Amino acid sequence: MHKNRVVVIGGGLGGLSVAIRLAAAGRSVTVFERGATFGGKMNLWEERGFRFDTGPSLITMPWIFAEVFEAAGKRIEDYLDLAPVNPISEYIFPDGTSFSYTSSLPDWIETVRQLEPRDVEGFLRFMKLGAQLYEVSKDTFLRRRPLDWPRRTDSGILKHMPWRYGWGNYHKTIAAHFQSPHLRQLYDRYPTYVGSSPYQSPATLAVIPYIEYTFGGWYIKGGLYRIVEGFVELARELGVELVLNANVTGIEHSSSEVSGVRLEDGARVDADLVVMNGDASFALQLLGKSGHGLRHEERSMSGLVFLLGISRTIPELHHHAIYFSGDYRREFSELFDARRFPTDPTVYVNAPSRSDRSVVPGEGESLFIMANAPANDHDTWDEDQISEARRRVFQRLRSSGFPDIEKNIVVEDVWTPKKIGSRYQMPGGAIYGTHSHGWKHAFLRPGNKDRRYRGLYYVGGSTHPGGGTPTVLLSSQITSELIQRYES
Image (cartoon, rainbow, N blue to C red):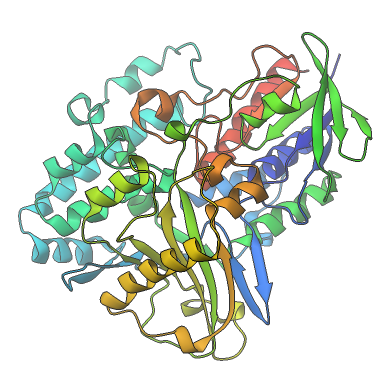
């Protein structure tokens, strides 16, 4: 029997994209989103003419986004206006050193040479390592579910695995390729893209800087929330029923099969298939099962975010800039070992108004300022805690030469780990679910098909293949392919 009725719990990027794929394949799909907007962590805040992305601010691998539209026979260009970002970012260090991380290879090689001549060869070796890891992972991991039986073609792919550096510690691999402390700190930052520490992550995460440098950083005109708006538009064209402010409180099931969902208002919605888009550990609660959520020691980092609308133009701002702390190892020790907000945080500043004046009114600037924070349940994030964390963030910015903006702030919103956790049902505000420390957490995330309940599937950053915007879309591809394989 063709199982046609699908309910998707959660209208994040994973939920919307899997709904598009399944609707394009002829299934009847309903998406229930508990919030007032779609997009999950890729969301939007608008105030007094300022438009802010509250989540991701840069994408890479744009063809993965295009594939969602292509699954429905559409072109991404008809929905979104993509623009490359170059330089990818500006890096500012406590000793006064600063440089642009440009995607122009000749220009970047010259920057590396000026920092440390020996690191030119190290950078090229590091990119080769990343290329090998990418070739191995793109077909054997990123587009397949975990623990799938090997294919005959896998042996030819795996022979390219860089065994020497591909299986070790990420930070040690960086240190083996770069002598410059500035370049070491730059490349040590990449595990934070999946909420993890460079000192505890596997070296296979070296694929992340390779992907970003090779395929570039991309922005969407109007802000990255345009991706969500494009997905919503396409989903509606395909007949997907999209329901906001609809909180699913339970998954109906027998001993072996799901049969629908229950809503907070008491309504029951029948379904042949249920797809959970959200933290995979939350599914136990919806199934009425006991079990622990994500333990503190398993959680990825969260973040403390300040969204600021500035009343004046600041030409010296960059679209993306990183203001590094003075002691990176101490910062991650505080985040993961002491589980407290760093004494001296590294601060990320995203100023999309430098590239796109449509996100601000008149002569202003829109700023997304973020520092990493632990995903703790016990942190209250009251006014005193926010005030002290804010002081540390702005102290780092001021000491690194960031312009004085305090008197020019006209709109402001603060996102704490507590707010993130509450809004998106993420334990402690753990943005990427589990961290990627060690092989189990990096590569054996929860699968996309439930092992006990027939008809129950998972999609999103907390499931395979992991956190990050492109990988969430790959998760939706894997999940939809599994449904097509097993539920037709």
